[in-house]
Image (cartoon, rainbow over all chains, first blue to last red; front, top):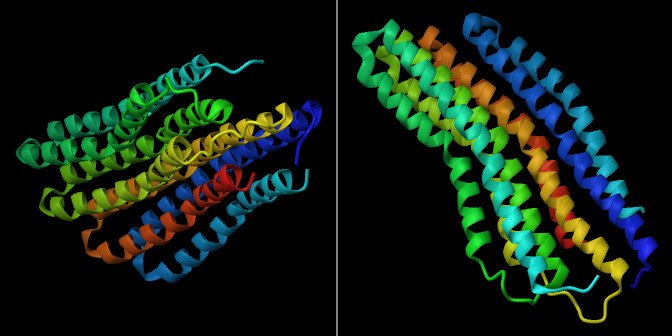
Length: 83
Length: 250
């Protein structure tokens, strides 16, 4: 398929947007989930008898902070495949 | 715009500079954090100076890994065959993107490895008796945080060596789409490794720190560290998927 210059620029901008969206979007969840897991390590070391409770809280918290990463993935895939 | 071989050279040299320039920033910061904590640890626990010094050196070596990846990519960009015109705009874009991917990609992992090495030195100074267990945990944690730097390295190699040549009868619009897709794939994995690398480094640092305070809970701490690091890694994997799609699906 061949594109005109204007169509090419539109598609190229969408792709650049997709790359930036996923790249920047992965930044927050990565740091946030790491912080959760670090604090969970600290909590489990301090009160090992509550290990299962702390692990559960850690996983739920990480799942919630993962959501923005998944939004970025969805937007990036939309920008790649439906423009 | 007419294509000439200088465009590939411009992209390759620019990519090489960006790669090692950005990549060196946090490699230096990370090694500095480790050295600082090591020196402070020796002040607090002068008897354990050999053990702290060893932990510091090993930690710094592991924290430099991503910087070395960046150096390798920039050497390959400088001394690669950037004086041959085949590949056209695609190859120029891919060289620039490889530099961006590895340069940005080494920022997070180096910072994370630096933090975890620093905490490990502090922890060894607190509990020299368990120094070997702490150093083992530090190395595992740093390896986990360097995983995302390895994703960036893989993408950079793919960009440098697996880009198809530009077909002769291709419209300008198509050229722009493919070239921008390659640059976007570099940006995606470059920025995408920043968060997970730093986050996993924080997990590993906290785990080493707690192993020095509560050495009896070693197995529970390590299990939580692995679980937490695996979940944090997921966004780096999304970025890797998006950059593979941008390289190969367009």
